[in-house]
Amino acid sequence: MLAHVGCSCTNLTIEQKNELLAMEESLKQLADRAAKAVEDKNRHTANESMKKTVTYNLECNLNKYKEVESEVKQMEQKLTALQEQVKEAKRKRESVLTEQKRIFRSSKKMKMELEALEKEWAECESKGKVAEYEEKTVEAEWERIKHFISSIKEDIKRALEKYGGEKKVLFSDLRVSNLIFLLCLLSFSNYFLSYPHPSTVTADKSWVQQHSI
Image 1 (spheres, one colour):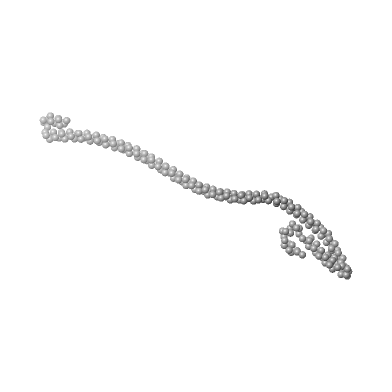
Image 2: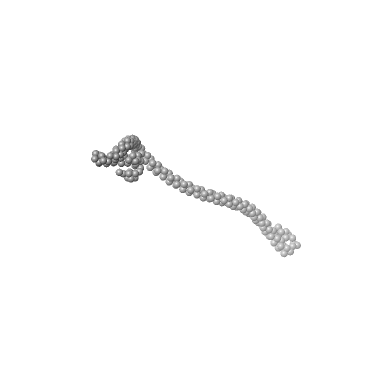
């Protein structure tokens, strides 16, 4: 356009015409440059907005990451505590199982002993009744013998006193064997009356050895 105007004006010099042509070319470049500048500015604005959005999202994600990381640590601590509780529970379980096995073995043994006792119960009960009857019989016999010995002890003493007062007649009329018999009978009666009850003799056999005739 400027070149067309310059060609129609004869008053312009060649230099002026060249300047006009250069200005026209420059105007064309300025338009392109302005369009490019606007495009770059818009692109920069878009990038700036996107950068702010991405930065905000990144900060949000970082905050969430820190929160999740804290939760993860708390969960790990809880898991560690739970693992310790599980180990302790397993140890207690093993201890309880061991005690259970011991009680089971002991109960099984007691059951076997009880069954054996039940099998022998009738026989033991019968023997117990026989033993009780025998004990009563022995005690009755013991009292009878003791009473008899006590009753003849005084007679033996009187007989010995009588023979002791008649020394001259003793060796002429009474046989020595009768005197010895009376002495032995008196000694036996003393021994028997000092003898403990049969129920206590088995518990203290040393008495029998010390007082044996």
